[in-house]
Amino acid sequence: MKDYSALLFALTVFFSLWAVMARKLLTSAIMLALVSVCVSLIFFDFGAPWAGVFELSVCAGLITVLFIGAVSLIRSDEEKRPEGRAAFLALPLAAAIFAIAGWFYLPAFFTELADWVRPGNGRATLGQALWELRRPDLLGQILMLAAGVFVIKSVFPRRNEK
Amino acid sequence: MTSFAMEWYLIALMLFVGFYGMLASRSIVRQLIGLEIVSKAAMLALISAGALSDNLVYAQALLLTMIVIEVVVVAAGLALLVKTFRINGTADIWRLDSLKG
Image (cartoon, helix red, strand yellow):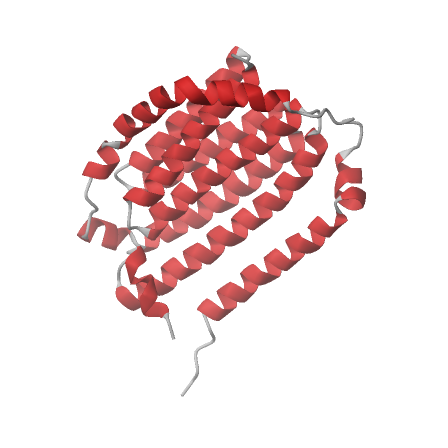
């Protein structure tokens, strides 16, 4: 693992911890955006630029805007009824226990998992993969977007004048 | 230890943090943030596996679908949050059942 890649992975885990532990929801939303930025940099580092661009524009951009809009709406409730902090403050301890316990089992398991890999040819372009080989995925994406629009339409029905 | 094993070890840690966040909080926003972290870990796992097997192109194609699904899930979740906040004045996930009927 390269130093740059290891640093990005470590930053991603750190910002995830911060996003979960932050007292204010706005801080959580911003930390989540930073997680997305780190993830997109990791994608670029892996040689997956399309994934990186989408992650950066959609997840770090659009989803953060949605979160910040929602947080600004419920800010009064957050200040009125703050959540108990004990469970969040225990997170570093729980994560450390998981990390130490997992260190003995997980890397060995993942190393064995990597031995099962069957190398692909890696020659196709993203255009071929999207438009030819995985064309049904596009139909699925369109259906998902339609389902999202339908959910929002049914959650916020038009008000009846009567 | 191989690079792949180290990457997946950190991804597993990230999954743990996301699930912990979802379990520890009753706020819908924090639940969605936990879900986002879990989703990011899954994306990293997908791309890492794609890089290992020299199939990055297919991994990227799958990941684009995953991003679309993620956006729709977050938008639907936040729409439910706005609705439940208008009705109950709180973002508590246990009050979502008041939306039934």
